[in-house]
Image 1 (cartoon, one colour):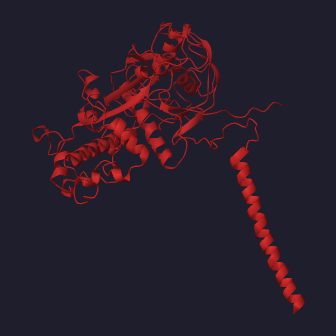
Image 2 (tube, helix red, strand yellow; image 1 turned 180 degrees about the vertical axis):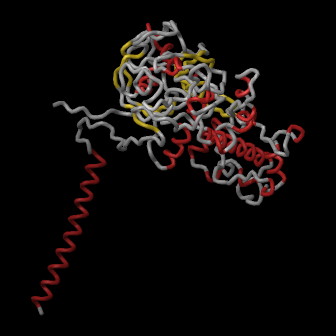
Image 3 (cartoon, helix red, strand yellow; image 1 turned 135 degrees about the vertical axis):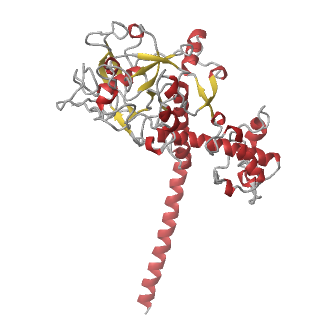
Length: 475
């Protein structure tokens, strides 16, 4: 019995000693981690591991060098694209042109945010808060109840938002509340009053349809003009300059100009395209047109903020911004890895071995239908090039980020060349369209349009910078 008790006592004592040892070990680790975990060595500031994620609907274009410009005869004798060896880094690019469906997501977001902002202002004027769940109080600004704000939010409101000329600047909208656009479900007369102001007056309706006032769909954003800031730094020989003059504010109406289908063609009946092309589900997978360069840039800004809003909610790092491709990137992607190719498919011919046209354009003497399309076609039509990019020739021409200068190839850098002048309204468009002759389908052909102009044959696709690079193995 005594032997059994002593064994039990020893086991208990060993258990207590082990607990004390674990406590001491934990404390020592805490002291080491809190006090001198780097041991005085240069170990760097570690951040969360970055795992690049391929954006939805995009393909990775691995960077490299190529001969940009016309390596064959300049049929039009424009002499605006002499051959030049350039290098571009890796980037992601949309497989297709931005479609009507994708651009409508942008339009719907702006429409909803406009309605939420107007409802929140109305609730603020009526001094209603989220506690008023039966009326528009549920759409009040997120910071309407100041007791729920943290110290930083209170500081920002007191020192910035409340001092702004716009009393509502910087205040967060309540996206948690669901909007209803069905008049039968309006919550109260205040809600009805706000929503009614978004529509055209009844005398402007026709065919019995209530018409939204699309002029009120305005997207506001800010951006930093890094090129202008760098130029100022170079001029003043100062490393740091006042950033204020280089933070630009933009406000732009974002609804497509559907009248381009009529304005672009004189003495031609294209009203069905004007009436239905952007709004009807039959065309949802067709490339969006009637978009100016400025609207395309606004879309890129929205897409970046939309994605990064999700990233922040999930505690993830921001992604690189979406943008229009520069001219060198566009041509590199259009070539599909085939050097000296005339068209994205590589060959100098417009027909395949079965005598079928390889793109949507204006062949022969204006027989629009011979390529199996009269106007545009779905964004995933015809065969993609070797980078899996669709319609890099034909269908719609595409905006790029580059300003147009006929002689730019003579002076741009050989590393990721691009010119972007704020005072140059001519922007490069590439690829040719459904109404263009074959010359403009060539991967080296250049054309331009003014940045504030929309056309029935110009669309766009976006790119995103590839962050980091693959590890190099030296054999």
